[in-house]
Image (cartoon, rainbow, N blue to C red; front, side, top):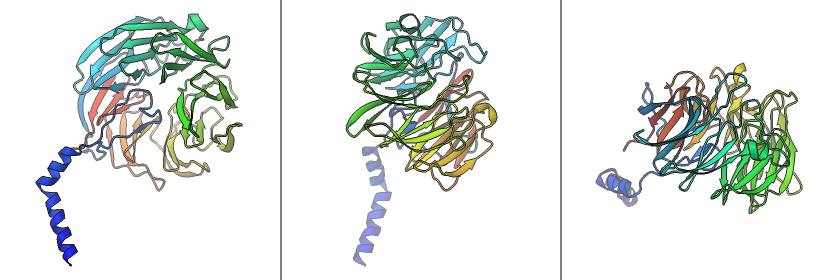
Length: 420
């Protein structure tokens, strides 16, 4: 009885000014989004400062900005947002204040890229911010380092000239990965330069590996059994490398059977399991990592075949889009260990999926943003709103409570922060 009375008094005490005081001393955790697929390269936003319960009209739009062609995604670090796009015969790197949208600087570089299919002629790869440097890879294969504070170009490596990087179907599209003192990219170069590592301070070649053609997938780092690995999904399949010297530990073939195909989704590494997915009749597989080579747990083409958007993982379940963009894909939840489909949501079209505070944040190609709990029971949206026009293909960024989405000709900033 005495305990119940004391507990009631304590709860009343916490509900008043003391709660406000405690809230001010223990603020909600926020996080930057400095590279493709976020800080851990897996589509996860680890801050707990987002609200997924929006009004009917959607979250507040803070600002928007006109941008040129390109599928490169926005990235955010230290209150600076960087966007890579094209204007005329120049690739344009712009730095904005992430909260106000105010321009801080603009840097340009020449380009003559022409898309063979007439889709888009802007840069495809998403920049990576590391410290005070930005690393970009243009559609023609020019890898550059820039100063984040001023926009000054620090070095350039023309991978087409130096390594024979081919154009491919849709230009060069690997988003750079910074690992220790190296910048790693999949370029499909000649003479063993399928994958290269350049010194981040100078652009000097550190190592090169494999003879395989490039894909449109970006690399993922992982630590397994206290050892560091980088996983590339090139056109032929999965490659596991030592980031220090480029030593290839193993390669796992996983290429669609038709020539006019690309691998685009980034590998997901969950503990000692690797989820690998593509489209064009090949599909998805889960591998168990072993020093002697991977062990295949399951492989199916009609479960979770990612065309271009990487899936996310939570608590033993995968969430992502199954099926080709032009054929009406469906959003799905799939058991990681077995490949069993737990639920399917039709009629959303293509899109991307991010994970934030236990919720899926789905951005569709049609310009809808949807928030739903990441649960294998069912797809039950909490909020949804039509926020952009049709044509959203780039990945969004979630940073410090804000959602940044690049549509075809505009970049949007929405406030998703929890209100006190």
